[in-house]
Image (cartoon, rainbow, N blue to C red; front, side):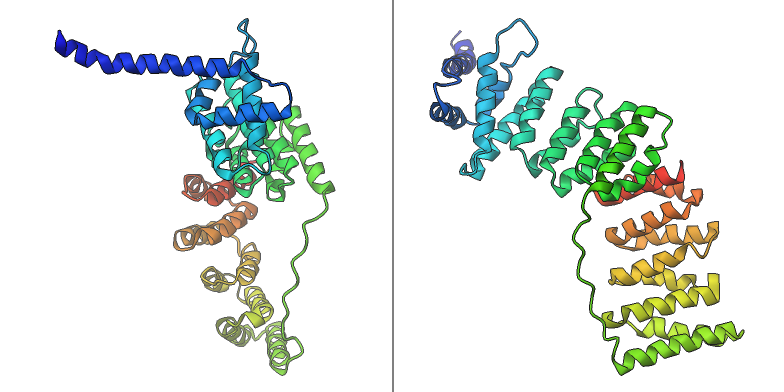
Length: 383
């Protein structure tokens, strides 16, 4: 009997302390919403002082659209969310509120309660809530409040998960994502929105067309200053003349000699100051050699110069064929995620469906940017 009592005592203590804690929280809730703003803030600080678990318990007292009166709990939830958004509140306090709301979100099984908590996270959450909210974007009931919350948070991470979700969404679940990306003026989503504007579902058509119109009406992002190149230098003029000479040789039928000259410039002009000339030599080499210049385009993917890589990818469409597409696909495994994204975009624009299996595999890549690029490319290839 003594051993039984010893075993039961911790459980009894845990139960009694839980009852006391719930009773104390219930007593605090009866004092909401307070007589004025100052008193409401004081009550919110008192609630926050009890820790994230108290906020989780508060979320458990919510019963929207039921006969149970939960007005005190809703007042308290709103007060603590508003308090967390005050400019003079410590970041640690805001994070404590967010943690409590996330605990409550995870614990609740009621869709209306979850939606209510998500709306609170929309106001006080930042990047720390992006991943938890992203998990609801595929949900038929909670996808819309989650998308609205992420659009309000509006950080690059929030925008990425919205774009990723649109790439895999189907049916009506696309609508809140389309709206969110339009609100965020996400220009990178223009290709997939353009495809959706021709969708067989007229509601999706309208939503995508509206998002495109919003993005188009927005002022363009500030342009980065053009890089300065030594165009007036003697060296620049000499190289420019050599490239023109190679072009003339090709026009005269001396393509082999022209190709040798252009290849030399492609190999040697690695100084970023001469990127436009190197790009011009590469473009001319593709025009002269055709498929024989493919290795130079593929080698350009190893360059750390994005402008030169862009020039090479711009030439990729001039060398058609499935065998060529296969060479580009094989290159994906040997480059950085940044370059993978660039190649994937090119594959989507290239229009060769033989790239589809690889792009589906790339949707499982660890890098969100790669996943999103693959999803958009697949939409373009499978339209």
